[in-house]
Image 1 (cartoon, rainbow, N blue to C red):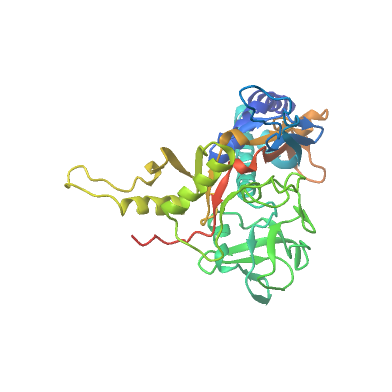
Image 2: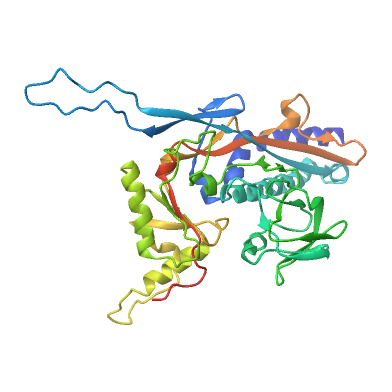
Length: 405
């Protein structure tokens, strides 16, 4: 067993390098995979990102003969936003029997590969949910449920089930915006009913209302969320990155009080506002699969055919806006469309993912006391950030049905 264990350790060190761990962390997620990953802003466990707020006031127009009264020199209006690197952990586990009863170290490594790949995929899924969130850490809003362990979700939050953010085995808290576990603390989801939009939780009965929210257990304290920023608060107008300056906001936001259809006019408005504010147009359209589909239908309704030869349909992934392919991300909420500038959106990190057990002087797999299991843990310090919020815009509260032609 000892020789097999040593061989497994060697394989894990050789195969599951930091480069591969990071690649798999971002792989198959369009948003996370596309944006830049950088550690150049790192100061300890905080990233300090320079931001440009406004132009200098030192401009003068002078007569042909010159002038001795130039306007005073001035600095560019800059500041720095501070982003705390959020800590993402994922653990893997292997029973010692997998080593003692397997046919050699390669078989054990194969079993470990399943565990590591699964753990990274699970973590990536949760991080993707945060990347499209609003920085609150809420996975879903509750509906009305009285003295029961079967919790009904709010009618507009079915997407949390559809995208697999809530599933059996996940430990959750239920509470208010200011008290994360005032209704239920550390409860395990035991069942999910997609047809009725409900989850069943362990423990005693609870009563919920529309003022209650579901979050991953221990991910929040009061109103503080320990996770990542998301496009929902990056492309926004409130305080962000420690700055409250009015100039540090997104100017191109279309968010009506009641749901409105996606339209070409709306898209043009957001695009124009970004262009007016920063002098450049956004270069990335990112939306939900539903809005990508509705955009395709919107264009199809305007198509005119001269004959029936070569007619085709259904390629909604080929529909373009301003010459750009409209990308769809499954984790994007159904009612949102983002216009982003890639150069001003990035992931700040301290380092690539690493094996915690190995970094601090041990083996990748360590015995978990009181069990027959060997465990390893990976950690990743990262945060989604921007240095110019005005370079991004969004449409929200879009209807979920096809626009009328």
